[in-house]
Image (tube, rainbow over all chains, first blue to last red; front, top):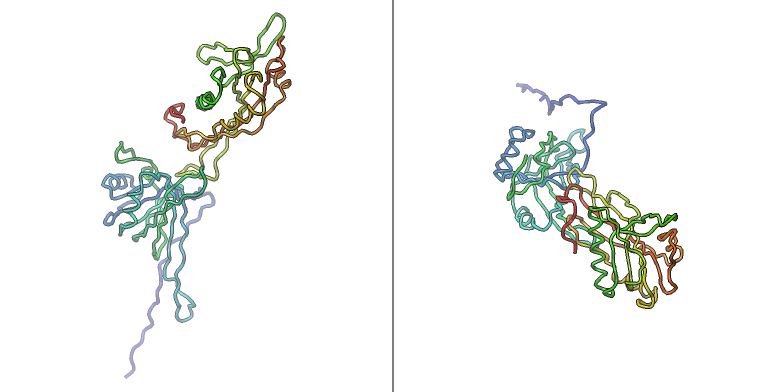
Length: 187
Length: 191
């Protein structure tokens, strides 16, 4: 007795519309602010300043308002393809590096952060904040060069692996404002 | 004004290394005055509060008289340092200054020895928060007394005595800072 066969539809993915605007103001570079989000904290709306302020006040969000740094865009991880596909994209290894100019009083902070697990990372470019969906590893260093005029800064590398690139959201002003928990907090 | 603080610190530093009758003045200007029907130009220090002018030039009371003149300021971004946050870079103001030194060789010795002493005692850097760095550099020296006297004492009836020397030390003060970090007009504490 013959078996019925069917042909699966395949792995079709719904692709949204591409956006085009000749006159769009470009997003400017540099990782200008950075920070870390504690395990268990999730945004309902990452563009809502109130959620950020509450997270900061509860110390579930650590903001480093003024840094300079880079994001490498991701190194692709590929594996063998099947059928007519030569290779298959399986994910990305992402890396972001930033310099924190506040060196003297942050040794304890970075020594603890590098041991912590489960923290997600965010970084701000000109107007957009990007938040990782997965936990990251943090590698802080404070190199000293042989130049009396140089500044000693924390040079921090943040690594993670994920399928998708971080999505940009409009950045609230609170994450670019310098503050200290011992002083008055201003949004 | 921050520049006056820097000059004050330079003079304090030099004063400790020179004879007690050496006189060090701050930023001065060429001041014209009418003497009879002749216009003279003399170096003077202007009191910014009262407008009173103090003569700071050649005299026979001091073995050494030194005053400073501001020639200009160059402003540029500090590219090598890089800014943080949204700021593109720190800012560097480079003040171009001259220190005019009159000395009586009978009391102070040869000019080349005096210059070497000055060069060795001239500060090379200052700690002046919130400036990130303040670097001082001697760039050149003019030893032509006649030329300098004609420049600083135009139209005067007196001349430089034979044993007196006038020379000009040109130097720069390079100050780097992050904009927005000044709470007050001048840094209070300069070392």
